Image (cartoon, rainbow over all chains, first blue to last red; front, side, top):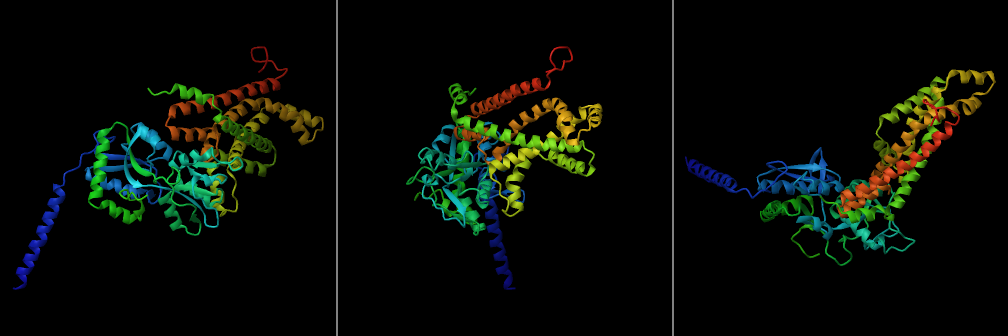
Length: 282
Length: 232
């Protein structure tokens, strides 16, 4: 008979908590969604699912840090999320042609791109050269790449970084760039020993070295892409210029995801704490 | 409408496409030579009495014609090293030329076969009457007559080959289309760049068209056309 009051009190407490809990989630208002969506009720995102752990295809479904982050953001705006998988160079024309609402594919924020698009920064990027485990070649800056064939992805910050120093290469050590459509193929070139190194994003480098430590090794520190001593480039969600509605909505959703700790949880889940956008200790 | 006219004209006459265009020409010539040699041997085999060899060549033609060129290119460049664990690792240019050449060989086999079969049987009987060996007969009697029939379809193949070199962007060969994609990925001027790339391909195809006309005229010497006048 003594147990009953305690049990009923416990039950009352639990059910109140549950009620409060449901009340809290149902009371949470939807954050404003972008005004003109490609598909009503869904945030359509253009991406290139070829760079684990940021964005890749797992059993046919999109997975990765970016996918989880966008999923959380869409939830804040009470939208579903859908991904369109393309090669990297097809993402910008696709966005301009309104085939999706935004692009999330480790896109570095550069002055040239900012002339055409707006960005919502969400990740601290950085470029890294990767080489074969058996190779001794190491690079400190992009200029060291002269004379060594390098594999990279067409249209990326890495390509811009190497193009910048291309003309300063000595005549007997020209810059040789082999451009592919995605980072996996660029890394495959390294595995085949057809190039000296691959120039990829630092999370992709970390992931492939962790997965295959006998084949790959870091060949450079994390580079900024703008020359030595400059801050690492930031990755951002790409928005068409002038679409303030979309920019504010995505920005607001991202801030909400950071505020409630989901951002930290995702960083920890994917082991990407070095990309925390809030840390500016470059 | 966005069209940067100044950029378009400066790009059309710029020298940065010259090396890629030269790469396209080198690859096309090498692949066509390889394809023509394979095709001639294949075509002769297909019209020969040796059933075993005919089946082998027939199998080759069916297989290669059934697989998209892009798949073949990726096979020679990435598929072979993966299969043989890195033992066979062909550099990009060589892989591209081999892939396109082998692909071309299948189509050329059929074209040469059609050319040979177009030569009437009387020619073979006359060669036998003159006691010519098989090799002599082919070289001096049949093939010279077969070539005249084979040139127009071959011309189609050459132009297709020039355009198929654009698929080599997938294995990072710095040819015309790859150079174009790299350019517009950096400066976002998609239409201007793609228009210039298209114009270069058209120029290459048109230049080959002139060569083809000369070839046809050479091989139709002495023949009268359907409505009088020259045959070509």
